[in-house]
Length: 222
Image (tube, rainbow, N blue to C red; front, top):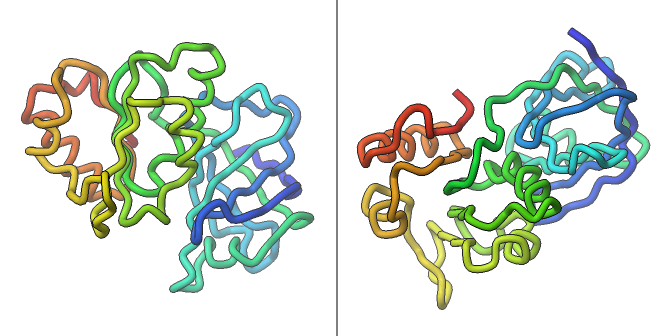
């Protein structure tokens, strides 16, 4: 397995519990938008604790970027990442991931599951190919939405926010269940991209298959 040690160039919070890390890009390091790598912290106590994170930058940029949800309630890798900043080092491993763009469709994300889609949307937007794609993005509350303004700017009316725990004027408080899919999706033969917590992905992919999607048009991390 190839590994690269990279320095953190910038680290800052973009929501109350999601931190953005901009890091050096090793020479020749490349990925397809939507892909991820295993990351560990370059410190003797942490270097063998690997966690997968998705690239959110454009592949042609001369740095790499990750948007990482920090879980402060247990002593894990992300909790530690919450306390490290520019100048610290991360270890990057091989690039992997099944989520990549296969043509226009509907993207369904839960929480931090938006991250593989950010790189895809940024790439499509830059190439002026984003038209015809729709995003349904579920979060607990408005404060949890990652990159809301940028997503709105790129997708315009094709950006649907769903909140599971908050009643905000003009927004939907509901879950993405079978009825929601029937009400909000006209065509189940299109591509579907699904990412989020494993139960979220399981329930949505099952409902989509029941409603007529096929294994070939469902793109998610297996």
